[in-house]
Image 1 (cartoon, rainbow, N blue to C red):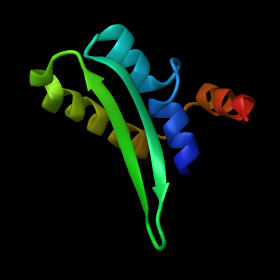
Image 2 (image 1 turned 180 degrees about the vertical axis):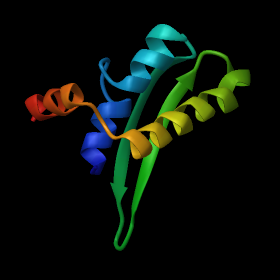
Image 3 (image 1 turned 90 degrees about the vertical axis):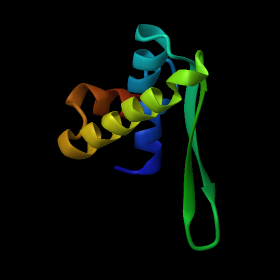
Image 4 (image 1 turned 135 degrees about the vertical axis):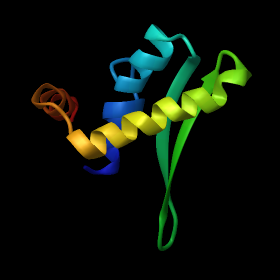
Length: 88
């Protein structure tokens, strides 16, 4: 999976997995998104969020980490693939 797919699937947009989970369902953040910074030989991948309660930052990070691991282990669904393709 490339950066654009991961960003769309997990972070960017109201339909992304972590937006739905962290903003809509758990109400832990007011927004979440990601972006990539292109450098000479490497790229940096940023995940940005605004916590509702600063004391919950480590918990929020653990949810993000868990979802990334889930995608690595299980991949994405056919429905998610079609949704991402239709956005292009």
